[in-house]
Length: 177
Image (cartoon, rainbow, N blue to C red; front, side, top):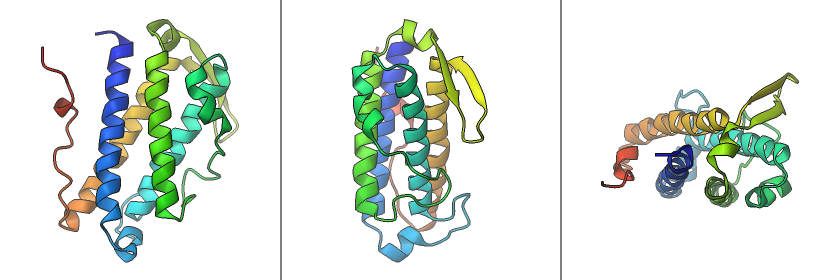
């Protein structure tokens, strides 16, 4: 399977899992959504917010470095979150809408991208002001891995509340041979 097909699968998985987590979060009352549960970012809301902020930051770096990609036009026009730590979207409905837009942009990007694009160098400056140049594919792999890591934390928080989000395995979306 090519990198392109792997990344398209990861983008679909990302969207599928986010839809499940946001549906579960929408069923919580405000208190449960915002309660500090001792997780790395405290609450379910803050962790969802962090994933979105990090995705927006990384996808914007790709969008800026590769202006020829039409699939990232919406990302270029998004206002970047001020923080990757802390709550940028205190309103859950706005965060959910932003998440859906980001997931659509990631899917569109993986559909437009090619294996050759994933091999290209990606220059960016991180939040500490340090410049880096890395291959685009491994950077996107980091984005997906980061999402999965923090979604695992959120499913644990849901489990502690007695909320079952169901199957979370990538294997559920891997096509049969």
